[in-house]
Image 1: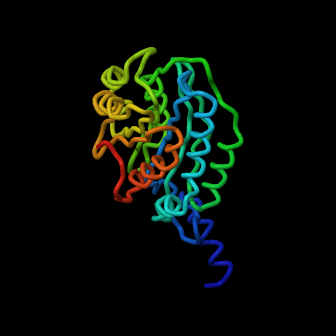
Image 2 (image 1 turned 90 degrees about the vertical axis):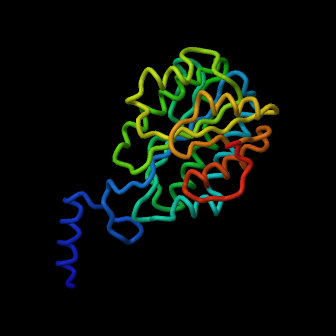
Image 3 (image 1 turned 135 degrees about the horizontal axis):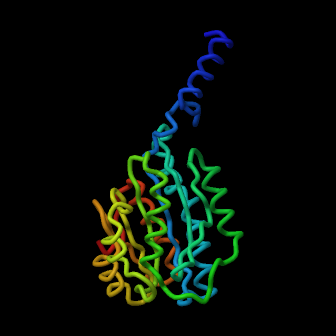
Length: 238
C-alpha cells in the first residue's frame, strides 16, 4: 500500500471514531472495563497510614503482574480513575479518567499519586457519599463493557446517608456497576461482614482484606488482579 493510501486510510479511521493504540486500530468505545479506585482519607486514617495507603496503591499499579493484567487486551483497554473520600462533601479526584494503553500510563498515575499531598484530614467516614461520588463518575463511562467501583476503608459509615440507603434511593446510578471492597484493620472480619451486607453489589462482587496499612499494597495487588480478570488465591473474604 502506498504512503498516500495508508495516510488516507488512517484519516478515514480517525474520522470514523477509531484510534491507534499499540500499533493496532481499535474503536475508541471498545473499553473493556472502567475502574474507579476510592481511597478512605477520613480522620481515622493517620499520616503514616495515609502514606502507606498512597504509596501502596502506587506500587501495586506498576507491579509487573498488575501491569500485565491491565494490558491483557490492548485492543480493548481499561480506563482508570482514582479519588479520595471522607466526609459528606469531601470527595476529590486525584487522577481523572485515563485510558491505560501502556505501562507509561500506569507509571504516570503512580508518580502523580506518590507526589500529591493529602486532600482531607479531619472529617468523618461518609461511606455512602463516597459510593455515590464513584457511581456518578462511572456514569460518564457507560460505553465500557464493565463498570467497577473499588472502595477501600477502615471503618463503617458514621456520617450522612448509609451505603445501602444510597444504593436503594438512587438505583439508576448504580445500575450495571459492580462494587468491591477492601477492608483494612485488625478486625477485618467484622468490617468485612459490614461491607458484604451494606457496601458491595453486583455479579462476582467481593471483599478483600488487609490486616493493617502495611499490608495494603499486597491486598491491593490481589484485588486489582481479580478485578482485571486474573483468578488467583487470595485472602479475600468473599
